[in-house]
Length: 259
Image 1: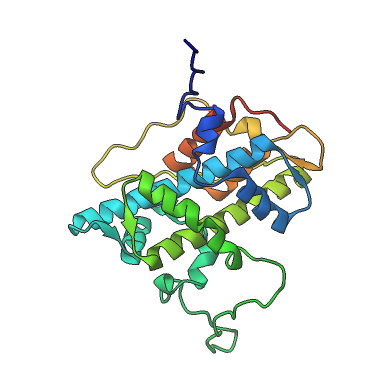
Image 2 (image 1 turned 90 degrees about the vertical axis):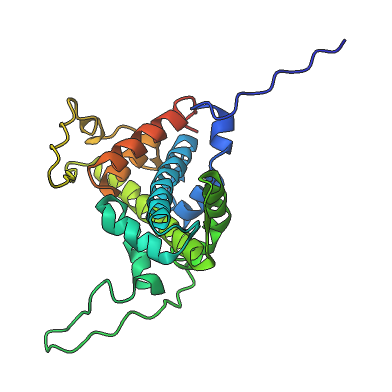
């Protein structure tokens, strides 16, 4: 009797199957980084960036689900996205998308020049170089996969907003990773402590894991995993979302090579 080969474990942190299960593939991550920089992106860096993006979008979707459930709805609408961000400041990411999406019109404020005249909203760029907004459609399949994994459905406008936020967030993450490489690390980290009225303040972290990211090692031509982790601290506030994103990224890359 022929012995059947053992199937690999699914969902085990750090395994190839866990990485393959990510809705945002490393190839997509590298395509976004290529729009930003000619630097080489290591495999572990691509997987880390995919993991961080997944963690952020998961938190946004879960927040929107709670808003929909409060109104006894199953399908997510753009209003649920606004409610999620309003309830949790940590979810305010990918803000360049806000100027493009009708969902956020009227929420970003009106700009005036020195003479008190309203500054017209920015027109869409005609640049041939792909931008985060133009490339947002690349994230649609991953967003839909992530929605299914969270047992959620969304109207097309909500899917487009999630696409755009994911694209802008990852593009900003790429730019900050480039800055980390060029500047040799990050010296300052923003921290926000969220407190609810009538509730005790959350205890501070006993150890600061961010200090290890304040300086980098390696050449100046390759973006590595630690550069992505450092960039994550620049993109996310110092609350639970940032800690979770860093933890999940480390788990997703613990068995990967640097090439």
